Image 1: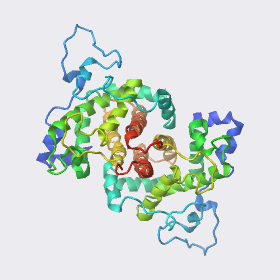
Image 2 (image 1 turned 135 degrees about the vertical axis):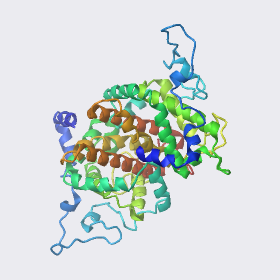
Image 3 (image 1 turned 180 degrees about the vertical axis):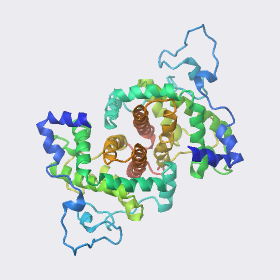
Image 4 (image 1 turned 60 degrees about the horizontal axis):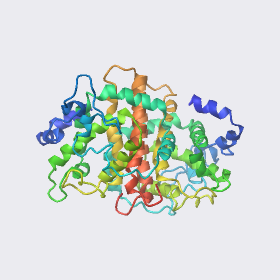
Length: 246
Length: 246
């Protein structure tokens, strides 16, 4: 982590990129909503707090999301391929308490990795001018922050499964740029979609360890994140896979 | 790990499956070769000891392996997407010293996971009779053991890159069963190919920690394995991905 931060201090240009032109959100606090004291407004379909469903382009649990090509039963089976168990759910949920006030820092880290690598940065840039589409990057970053919370909450219903498919479509040429009216490279390669999972999970370790949990508990949260990341990447890959091969 | 071992003790049937009808190999010791004292016979193209290249179907470094669709430069770039660095190479190579006499136990663990899950076991079974193809399972297990050593050696040349493509083809309907004249289900689904990576890497942790290295060193070996696993799964996916999407 330190290496990234030091590296970025060298580039004035990077600061705006890292901030995405905005403060990266913990969506639950970023969007103030009016409600009665103590009352939590919740979307009944998904249990997602209403404030979060207002993030631009965050269509989790809405009719705009297409149906997942795989069924709930297939998802149950898939979890077994990754040894993903109820214990992992427990540690993911514990990780929410650890990560929820560190989402901004995580996003800065991940955006730093992207910024450092032209072939990754290209996904936020106009393919000819190589100018970063700041509005696109900002909107995506907000949903990326929301994704951290959704992953940690580990609530696997049909709405969650459908939204994983939607996330895949938004990385694939099928829907890249559509949600945000972006002007960036029109397709994230399957290779980067999968390999970047390591860039997401490995740097999380120090964040997971920052709240005083024992090494054993940190390791279990970390493994749960790895498994969940891999399972989600698998679901995101669906639009990339040849007919019948998934 | 304990849970797997206890679970398997319940099933007499599983023992033969776990053994694959044979002792799983550390290939370097399993095939005795005649040579002058102190001399190590090596395939000059790949630096793979000649004894290993004699494993049935292990065509690493031979002209039978098709050329990888991606170039060495693209591989260099891909490593960056996963934050894979020279430090990871160091820890992978250290892991060879830790794992080389534990390959049999690793294979038993992985085969145990496969055996426990009908949808994974199906890949070693005849699709109609559901009988395990023992010859196929045995041949695959030997190369799986060899793969542990190859991964730990982390020697990334063209022969290695080409062989990753070949491994992908052998999981995909393109070449499943071909190498060993197998009679098993003719295609490993992309979803299981990716998700099973967690079943490979997570159980390795205790093996990596069994030789007295500090927790920090074990964690670094573990992360290097995760990254390498993810990068290899990415390369294996090539035959599964739609034209132009990889």
